Image 1 (cartoon, rainbow, N blue to C red):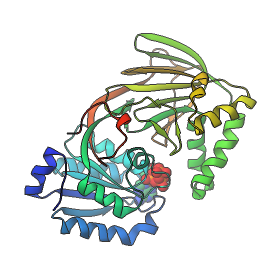
Image 2: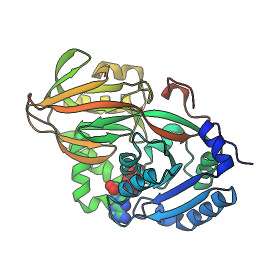
Image 3: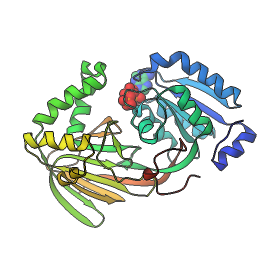
Image 4: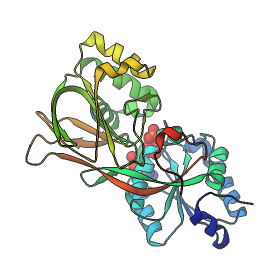
Length: 326
Ligand SMILES: Nc1ncnc2c1ncn2[C@@H]1O[C@H](COP(=O)(O)OP(=O)(O)OP(=O)(O)O)[C@@H](O)[C@H]1O
Protein backbone atom coordinates (compact mmCIF):
# COMPACT_ATOMS: atom_id res chain seq x y z
CA UNK A 1 0.00 0.00 0.00
CA UNK A 2 1.39 3.33 -1.02
CA UNK A 3 2.13 5.71 1.85
CA UNK A 4 2.89 9.41 1.70
CA UNK A 5 3.01 12.10 4.37
CA UNK A 6 1.55 14.86 2.26
CA UNK A 7 -2.12 15.65 2.85
CA UNK A 8 -2.50 16.28 -0.85
CA UNK A 9 -0.82 13.00 -1.58
CA UNK A 10 -3.00 11.09 0.84
CA UNK A 11 -6.04 12.42 -0.96
CA UNK A 12 -4.21 11.50 -4.17
CA UNK A 13 -4.19 7.90 -2.97
CA UNK A 14 -7.93 7.94 -3.47
CA UNK A 15 -7.93 9.66 -6.83
CA UNK A 16 -4.62 8.24 -8.17
CA UNK A 17 -1.51 10.38 -8.57
CA UNK A 18 -1.04 11.91 -11.99
CA UNK A 19 2.64 12.12 -12.89
CA UNK A 20 4.65 13.20 -15.91
CA UNK A 21 8.24 11.96 -16.08
CA UNK A 22 10.40 14.39 -18.06
CA UNK A 23 13.64 12.72 -19.15
CA UNK A 24 16.72 14.42 -20.59
CA UNK A 25 18.37 11.68 -22.71
CA UNK A 26 21.60 13.74 -22.94
CA UNK A 27 22.10 13.99 -19.16
CA UNK A 28 25.11 12.29 -17.54
CA UNK A 29 24.03 8.71 -16.82
CA UNK A 30 20.74 8.54 -18.77
CA UNK A 31 21.92 5.99 -21.37
CA UNK A 32 23.06 3.72 -18.55
CA UNK A 33 19.62 3.97 -16.89
CA UNK A 34 17.32 3.95 -19.96
CA UNK A 35 16.02 0.40 -19.51
CA UNK A 36 15.54 0.82 -15.76
CA UNK A 37 13.43 3.94 -16.33
CA UNK A 38 10.86 1.93 -18.29
CA UNK A 39 10.64 -0.48 -15.35
CA UNK A 40 10.13 2.42 -12.95
CA UNK A 41 7.24 3.75 -15.04
CA UNK A 42 5.68 0.26 -14.77
CA UNK A 43 6.27 0.21 -11.00
CA UNK A 44 4.54 3.58 -10.57
CA UNK A 45 1.58 2.38 -12.65
CA UNK A 46 1.31 -0.80 -10.58
CA UNK A 47 1.10 1.46 -7.51
CA UNK A 48 -1.93 3.15 -9.09
CA UNK A 49 -0.15 6.21 -10.51
CA UNK A 50 -1.13 7.55 -13.93
CA UNK A 51 2.45 7.96 -15.13
CA UNK A 52 3.54 9.17 -18.56
CA UNK A 53 7.15 9.37 -19.77
CA UNK A 54 8.20 12.25 -22.06
CA UNK A 55 11.70 12.68 -23.50
CA UNK A 56 13.20 16.09 -24.26
CA UNK A 57 14.56 16.65 -27.74
CA UNK A 58 16.43 19.90 -27.06
CA UNK A 59 17.23 22.35 -24.27
CA UNK A 60 14.04 24.27 -23.37
CA UNK A 61 11.70 21.28 -23.83
CA UNK A 62 11.71 20.40 -20.12
CA UNK A 63 10.51 23.89 -19.15
CA UNK A 64 7.70 23.76 -21.74
CA UNK A 65 6.61 20.25 -20.69
CA UNK A 66 6.58 21.29 -17.02
CA UNK A 67 4.42 24.36 -17.80
CA UNK A 68 2.00 22.12 -19.70
CA UNK A 69 1.88 19.72 -16.75
CA UNK A 70 0.90 22.59 -14.43
CA UNK A 71 -1.88 23.66 -16.82
CA UNK A 72 -3.14 20.05 -16.85
CA UNK A 73 -3.10 20.02 -13.01
CA UNK A 74 -0.64 17.12 -12.93
CA UNK A 75 0.23 16.21 -9.33
CA UNK A 76 3.93 15.41 -9.77
CA UNK A 77 6.53 16.19 -12.44
CA UNK A 78 9.46 13.80 -12.13
CA UNK A 79 12.77 15.09 -13.47
CA UNK A 80 14.96 12.39 -15.00
CA UNK A 81 18.26 14.15 -15.49
CA UNK A 82 20.66 16.33 -13.57
CA UNK A 83 20.44 19.77 -12.00
CA UNK A 84 20.21 21.46 -15.40
CA UNK A 85 17.04 19.52 -16.20
CA UNK A 86 15.62 20.31 -12.74
CA UNK A 87 16.52 23.96 -13.33
CA UNK A 88 14.44 24.00 -16.50
CA UNK A 89 11.53 22.19 -14.88
CA UNK A 90 11.26 24.57 -11.90
CA UNK A 91 10.77 27.48 -14.33
CA UNK A 92 7.46 25.80 -15.22
CA UNK A 93 6.53 24.57 -11.72
CA UNK A 94 7.24 27.75 -9.71
CA UNK A 95 4.17 28.97 -7.81
CA UNK A 96 2.09 25.90 -8.71
CA UNK A 97 0.62 22.95 -6.79
CA UNK A 98 2.53 20.47 -8.97
CA UNK A 99 5.32 18.82 -6.94
CA UNK A 100 8.84 18.10 -8.17
CA UNK A 101 10.12 14.54 -7.87
CA UNK A 102 13.57 13.43 -9.03
CA UNK A 103 15.09 10.29 -10.52
CA UNK A 104 18.71 11.45 -10.62
CA UNK A 105 20.57 10.67 -13.85
CA UNK A 106 22.83 13.71 -14.20
CA UNK A 107 26.57 13.98 -13.79
CA UNK A 108 26.74 15.50 -10.29
CA UNK A 109 23.10 15.57 -9.07
CA UNK A 110 23.57 18.22 -6.40
CA UNK A 111 19.87 18.48 -5.37
CA UNK A 112 19.56 14.70 -5.00
CA UNK A 113 22.73 14.59 -2.86
CA UNK A 114 21.62 17.58 -0.81
CA UNK A 115 18.32 16.02 0.30
CA UNK A 116 19.49 12.39 0.26
CA UNK A 117 17.59 11.07 -2.76
CA UNK A 118 19.40 7.80 -3.60
CA UNK A 119 21.40 7.90 -6.83
CA UNK A 120 20.19 4.39 -7.68
CA UNK A 121 16.89 4.80 -9.48
CA UNK A 122 14.97 2.09 -7.63
CA UNK A 123 15.87 3.79 -4.36
CA UNK A 124 14.82 7.15 -5.81
CA UNK A 125 11.52 5.63 -6.99
CA UNK A 126 10.89 4.45 -3.43
CA UNK A 127 11.25 8.09 -2.28
CA UNK A 128 8.60 9.13 -4.84
CA UNK A 129 6.24 6.56 -3.36
CA UNK A 130 7.10 6.90 0.33
CA UNK A 131 8.80 10.25 0.77
CA UNK A 132 7.49 13.47 2.26
CA UNK A 133 6.25 16.57 0.45
CA UNK A 134 7.53 19.97 1.51
CA UNK A 135 7.20 23.50 0.28
CA UNK A 136 10.48 25.29 -0.28
CA UNK A 137 11.61 28.69 -1.54
CA UNK A 138 13.09 29.37 -4.93
CA UNK A 139 15.70 32.02 -5.55
CA UNK A 140 15.31 34.38 -8.47
CA UNK A 141 17.94 36.16 -10.51
CA UNK A 142 16.31 38.77 -12.71
CA UNK A 143 13.33 36.73 -14.07
CA UNK A 144 14.98 33.28 -13.76
CA UNK A 145 14.22 30.97 -10.82
CA UNK A 146 16.91 28.89 -9.16
CA UNK A 147 16.72 25.96 -6.78
CA UNK A 148 20.32 25.67 -5.60
CA UNK A 149 22.55 28.70 -6.09
CA UNK A 150 23.93 31.44 -8.25
CA UNK A 151 27.71 31.71 -8.63
CA UNK A 152 29.49 34.86 -9.79
CA UNK A 153 33.21 34.84 -10.54
CA UNK A 154 35.48 31.81 -10.99
CA UNK A 155 32.64 29.30 -11.27
CA UNK A 156 30.73 31.50 -13.71
CA UNK A 157 33.81 31.56 -15.96
CA UNK A 158 34.32 27.80 -15.59
CA UNK A 159 30.67 27.03 -16.45
CA UNK A 160 30.76 29.28 -19.51
CA UNK A 161 34.15 27.91 -20.63
CA UNK A 162 33.08 24.26 -20.27
CA UNK A 163 29.83 24.88 -22.14
CA UNK A 164 31.67 25.88 -25.30
CA UNK A 165 34.38 23.23 -25.27
CA UNK A 166 34.70 19.50 -26.09
CA UNK A 167 36.03 19.14 -22.52
CA UNK A 168 32.33 18.98 -21.47
CA UNK A 169 32.30 15.39 -22.72
CA UNK A 170 34.78 14.52 -19.95
CA UNK A 171 32.05 15.27 -17.36
CA UNK A 172 33.32 15.98 -13.83
CA UNK A 173 36.98 15.58 -14.93
CA UNK A 174 36.44 18.23 -17.61
CA UNK A 175 34.99 20.64 -15.03
CA UNK A 176 37.89 20.00 -12.63
CA UNK A 177 40.49 20.65 -15.35
CA UNK A 178 38.88 23.92 -16.40
CA UNK A 179 38.30 24.89 -12.74
CA UNK A 180 41.99 24.33 -11.90
CA UNK A 181 43.01 26.47 -14.89
CA UNK A 182 40.63 29.32 -14.03
CA UNK A 183 41.07 29.06 -10.25
CA UNK A 184 44.82 29.68 -10.55
CA UNK A 185 44.73 32.57 -13.01
CA UNK A 186 41.44 34.32 -12.19
CA UNK A 187 41.87 37.96 -11.10
CA UNK A 188 39.65 39.33 -8.32
CA UNK A 189 36.76 41.63 -9.15
CA UNK A 190 35.29 44.60 -7.29
CA UNK A 191 31.66 44.11 -6.30
CA UNK A 192 29.12 46.33 -4.58
CA UNK A 193 26.40 44.32 -2.85
CA UNK A 194 23.30 45.74 -1.19
CA UNK A 195 21.23 43.52 1.12
CA UNK A 196 19.36 43.86 4.40
CA UNK A 197 19.70 47.65 4.35
CA UNK A 198 23.51 47.63 4.10
CA UNK A 199 25.91 48.09 1.21
CA UNK A 200 29.14 46.08 1.13
CA UNK A 201 32.09 46.77 -1.17
CA UNK A 202 34.42 43.80 -1.63
CA UNK A 203 37.28 42.52 -3.74
CA UNK A 204 36.02 39.04 -4.47
CA UNK A 205 37.21 35.87 -6.17
CA UNK A 206 33.82 34.31 -5.97
CA UNK A 207 30.33 35.26 -4.84
CA UNK A 208 27.81 32.50 -4.06
CA UNK A 209 24.15 33.22 -3.39
CA UNK A 210 22.52 30.05 -2.11
CA UNK A 211 18.98 28.85 -1.54
CA UNK A 212 20.46 25.52 -0.42
CA UNK A 213 23.81 24.45 1.11
CA UNK A 214 25.62 21.94 -1.09
CA UNK A 215 27.87 23.14 -3.91
CA UNK A 216 29.29 20.97 -6.69
CA UNK A 217 28.29 17.85 -4.76
CA UNK A 218 31.19 18.30 -2.31
CA UNK A 219 31.52 21.72 -0.68
CA UNK A 220 29.25 24.02 1.30
CA UNK A 221 29.71 27.75 0.68
CA UNK A 222 26.29 28.73 2.02
CA UNK A 223 26.46 26.27 4.92
CA UNK A 224 23.79 28.01 7.00
CA UNK A 225 21.16 28.17 4.23
CA UNK A 226 17.68 26.83 4.87
CA UNK A 227 15.66 26.29 1.74
CA UNK A 228 12.33 27.35 3.28
CA UNK A 229 13.18 30.38 5.45
CA UNK A 230 12.37 33.14 2.95
CA UNK A 231 16.03 34.20 2.80
CA UNK A 232 18.99 33.90 0.44
CA UNK A 233 22.45 33.27 1.90
CA UNK A 234 25.39 35.23 0.52
CA UNK A 235 28.99 33.99 0.76
CA UNK A 236 31.73 36.19 -0.68
CA UNK A 237 35.19 34.63 -1.02
CA UNK A 238 37.55 37.57 -0.63
CA UNK A 239 40.53 38.15 -2.94
CA UNK A 240 43.47 35.85 -2.05
CA UNK A 241 47.01 35.32 -3.28
CA UNK A 242 47.63 32.29 -5.47
CA UNK A 243 49.22 30.44 -2.54
CA UNK A 244 46.26 31.11 -0.25
CA UNK A 245 43.70 29.97 -2.86
CA UNK A 246 44.80 26.37 -2.26
CA UNK A 247 44.25 26.79 1.49
CA UNK A 248 40.79 28.27 0.90
CA UNK A 249 39.85 25.34 -1.34
CA UNK A 250 41.06 22.76 1.18
CA UNK A 251 39.21 24.47 4.07
CA UNK A 252 36.00 24.35 2.04
CA UNK A 253 36.50 20.79 0.79
CA UNK A 254 37.10 19.58 4.36
CA UNK A 255 34.28 21.86 5.66
CA UNK A 256 36.66 23.20 8.31
CA UNK A 257 35.53 25.78 10.85
CA UNK A 258 38.34 28.11 9.74
CA UNK A 259 36.79 28.53 6.28
CA UNK A 260 34.94 31.46 7.94
CA UNK A 261 38.12 33.58 7.88
CA UNK A 262 38.12 33.75 4.06
CA UNK A 263 34.54 34.92 3.60
CA UNK A 264 31.93 37.54 4.25
CA UNK A 265 28.62 35.80 5.04
CA UNK A 266 25.23 37.55 5.07
CA UNK A 267 21.55 36.78 4.49
CA UNK A 268 18.79 38.82 2.87
CA UNK A 269 15.49 38.73 1.01
CA UNK A 270 16.80 40.75 -1.92
CA UNK A 271 20.33 41.32 -3.14
CA UNK A 272 21.43 44.01 -5.58
CA UNK A 273 24.85 43.54 -7.09
CA UNK A 274 27.09 45.49 -9.45
CA UNK A 275 30.67 44.88 -10.46
CA UNK A 276 33.22 47.27 -11.93
CA UNK A 277 33.65 44.92 -14.90
CA UNK A 278 31.10 42.41 -16.22
CA UNK A 279 31.63 39.08 -14.40
CA UNK A 280 30.37 35.66 -15.58
CA UNK A 281 27.35 34.14 -13.79
CA UNK A 282 26.21 30.53 -13.39
CA UNK A 283 22.79 29.56 -12.08
CA UNK A 284 22.20 25.99 -10.80
CA UNK A 285 25.32 25.02 -12.81
CA UNK A 286 24.08 26.56 -16.09
CA UNK A 287 25.75 29.61 -17.69
CA UNK A 288 23.77 32.87 -17.43
CA UNK A 289 25.45 35.91 -18.98
CA UNK A 290 27.27 38.55 -16.93
CA UNK A 291 26.72 40.90 -13.99
CA UNK A 292 25.58 44.48 -14.43
CA UNK A 293 28.13 47.28 -14.15
CA UNK A 294 25.39 49.92 -13.85
CA UNK A 295 24.37 51.12 -10.38
CA UNK A 296 21.07 52.31 -11.88
CA UNK A 297 20.25 48.80 -13.10
CA UNK A 298 22.05 46.33 -10.79
CA UNK A 299 21.83 42.55 -11.10
CA UNK A 300 18.82 41.77 -8.92
CA UNK A 301 18.35 38.62 -6.85
CA UNK A 302 15.31 37.86 -4.74
CA UNK A 303 13.53 34.99 -3.08
CA UNK A 304 10.15 33.51 -4.01
CA UNK A 305 9.02 32.12 -0.64
CA UNK A 306 7.38 28.66 -0.64
CA UNK A 307 7.24 28.68 -4.45
CA UNK A 308 7.94 24.98 -5.02
CA UNK A 309 6.54 21.69 -3.72
CA UNK A 310 9.19 18.96 -3.57
CA UNK A 311 9.15 15.26 -2.74
CA UNK A 312 12.16 14.40 -0.58
CA UNK A 313 13.16 11.53 1.71
CA UNK A 314 11.68 11.53 5.22
CA UNK A 315 15.32 11.43 6.33
CA UNK A 316 16.29 14.64 4.46
CA UNK A 317 18.80 16.66 6.55
CA UNK A 318 16.89 18.59 9.22
CA UNK A 319 19.30 21.55 9.14
CA UNK A 320 18.22 22.33 5.56
CA UNK A 321 14.70 23.20 6.68
CA UNK A 322 13.15 25.65 9.12
CA UNK A 323 9.55 24.47 8.75
CA UNK A 324 7.61 21.22 9.11
CA UNK A 325 6.61 18.99 6.15
CA UNK A 326 3.16 19.60 4.64
N1 LIG B 1 17.25 16.55 -25.46
C1 LIG B 1 18.20 17.45 -25.14
N2 LIG B 1 19.21 17.70 -25.99
C2 LIG B 1 20.21 18.56 -25.65
N3 LIG B 1 20.27 19.21 -24.46
C3 LIG B 1 19.28 18.99 -23.57
C4 LIG B 1 18.18 18.11 -23.88
N4 LIG B 1 17.35 18.08 -22.80
C5 LIG B 1 17.88 18.93 -21.89
N5 LIG B 1 19.03 19.47 -22.34
C6 LIG B 1 19.97 20.36 -21.62
O1 LIG B 1 21.03 19.54 -21.11
C7 LIG B 1 21.72 20.29 -20.12
C8 LIG B 1 22.39 19.39 -19.09
O2 LIG B 1 21.42 18.63 -18.45
P1 LIG B 1 21.58 18.11 -16.94
O3 LIG B 1 22.14 19.19 -16.09
O4 LIG B 1 20.28 17.54 -16.56
O5 LIG B 1 22.62 16.94 -17.02
P2 LIG B 1 24.09 16.88 -16.44
O6 LIG B 1 24.84 18.12 -16.83
O7 LIG B 1 24.65 15.57 -16.85
O8 LIG B 1 23.83 16.82 -14.85
P3 LIG B 1 24.30 17.75 -13.61
O9 LIG B 1 23.80 19.14 -13.85
O10 LIG B 1 23.66 17.13 -12.38
O11 LIG B 1 25.79 17.65 -13.53
C9 LIG B 1 20.70 21.30 -19.59
O12 LIG B 1 21.18 22.59 -19.89
C10 LIG B 1 19.43 21.01 -20.37
O13 LIG B 1 18.76 22.21 -20.71
